[in-house]
Amino acid sequence: MQVIVDFCLVPMGVGVSVSRHVAACQTIIEEAGLVHRMHAYGTNIEGPWDEVFAVVKRCHEAVHAMGAPRINTTLKVGTRTDREQSMDDKVASVEDLLRH
Image (tube, rainbow, N blue to C red; front, top):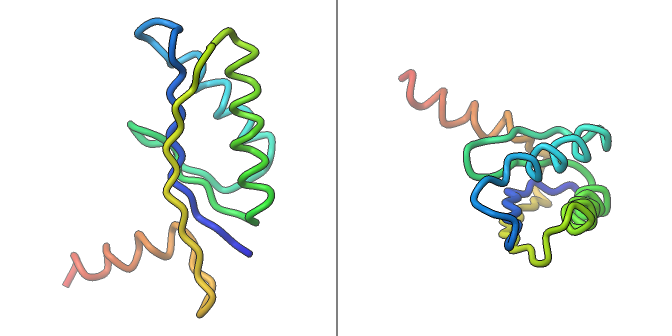
């Protein structure tokens, strides 16, 4: 099953700046070869269910290994069975409406 997630991992107990931890997760996502788009408060990731959730797990493992004693993650998960739809398809649909 294909899935699109909005993934926001927040390490706790590491101070105010978390950019080092976010960069580690971005590297993990990129190495997995999944389509993704980082934004100001998280990352959208699309791909097969098991691969996407394996990346989320690896991000947790890596951030804990970096010294974060706690992690708070928010996930929004979307799937479809009626047709295939990518992140780009979803954005293009709205952009088309805005042009008219």
